Image: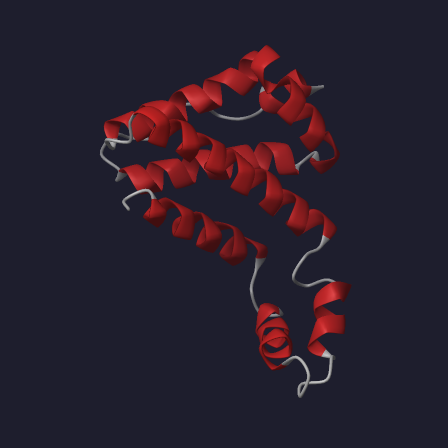
Length: 147
C-alpha cells in the first residue's frame, strides 16, 4: 500500500533556476498531494517508506536541494525530518481537524472574556484556506533553515 501511494509522487527535481525554498515547496506540495489523496495510509507510508522505491525518490530529491542550498550534516537530517513531520501533521490536521470544521466553530463561540486570543484567532481561521494554512506554515519552517 505504501508503494502504491508513494509511487504517485513526482520526484523529478524542479528547475535548478528556481530558488531552493520554492523548489522545496514544490516537492513538499507534491508529497502532500500524493499522500493526502489517501490520508488513512499516512501511518503505512511512514512505517514503510524506506521499503518503497517511491518513498526513497522524494527524500533523495529533497536532500539534493537542501545540499545545494548549503544545508549540511546534522542540520540536513533535522531539516528532512522537520519537513516530513510538518507534512504528516498538516495532512492529519487538514483531514481530521480542518480550520473550516466544527472545532473552529465551537472555539469561535467560546466566551470572549475568558478566551480572548483563542476566540479571535478561531474567527480569523474561518477565512484561511487549506492551501494558505499548509504553505504558510511550510514557509515559516523553511525560513528557519537560514538561522
